[in-house]
Length: 477
Ligand SMILES: *Cc1c(COP(=O)(O)O)cnc(C)c1O
Image 1 (cartoon, protein in one colour):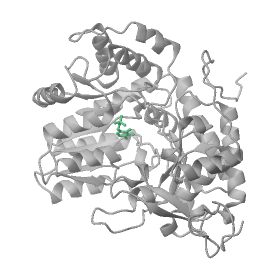
Image 2 (tube, rainbow, N blue to C red):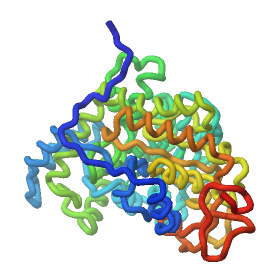
Image 3 (cartoon, helix red, strand yellow):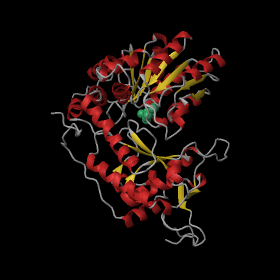
Image 4 (tube, protein in one colour):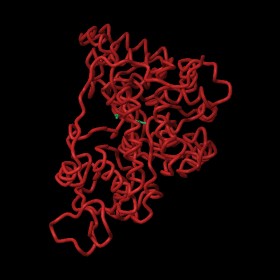
């Protein structure tokens, strides 16, 4: 008998209590935090979906591995275990540990990019873009056009636009030293990239003598989507699929806080000897000796075990299903989300859900606040508070107003997700009463982390006194 319920493929050995607060407490906490979820204390959050980065639960195998950590400065046993785990999956010759993914990016681009050069990517993650631009190079996003339409359903909506890749190489002869594909496409909704797309992008790059790298943060989730959606891969293991993905690339950057299943860490891996030497020299300057790269020996152990566990089929099936499970409930009840659900998060389309709030009043920010007010849920706005402020000081609304609910790995169970769905459906029912927000004060760069906001209340607002997030246009509740 094949039973249909997909269970969490683990049992719980250590528990961390989470704290219920009252709605009145949350109203006060929001006011004190300047209506900015980044400024809340984590202990005041019931279900924290701010990010899936470094927030996962480690397994008993990883904790046991940590006790084996070899803290020798050079040539530690833990490094060789880590190197073997990375090499087994990626096949790359040089494996360089770093403290996070962005350190791998900085070292790669710092060793490779010159001012005026162009780096195409399906969609650059924000640290990747920032590290390219820091080298005075241009980060060019060339995802397939469908990636920009939240409602459009495609199995591999993270794919790169291959014609745009060819065109970019033709337009900037000699100025494209490498191209990258991000799997899954985090900034594009966690959408997967097909093997055919990776293979074709790799062929284009090889034909033009250009390096091809993967931003591999969610390589295992991407492998699962290939297994379940791309013809010819159903009978292959996630490991074999991942190995094939990496076989088309010359190297990768990786944040072990994602599919490394660890709380910290990352790596850069590549084949080119001369480039690897330059990267290792820079690593020694800012991160550490090449056999630890800014990590403790026990971190290297945790990542080595995590990289093995993340490719287990029962884990990946549970992981992708638990995100899709929430997506299915929301879709069935008319809540607009980015379709289809991605690998690590659900993105609510706030522009579609709250048409009465103009983009100048930050609908996604407002929605994220109400999810906390009503249910103690922390999400993150990916919209005009995050992206609306231009370097020249002007305001330009973001392409989409999204609320991202990112799932930490192996942390929450189905009852947590059922609760989430209940809160979101309740908020959807009262959506017409959600008020827009305005910025009270904000720094000019990365303002979403520290901005102080306030509800837009209409004529009844007494100066200095906040009205509530939910109410009527004239300020009454
Ligand atoms: C998280 C992430 C990074 C950066 O990794 P950190 O460990 O946070 O520095 C780079 N690319 C993608 C796609 C990511 O999701």
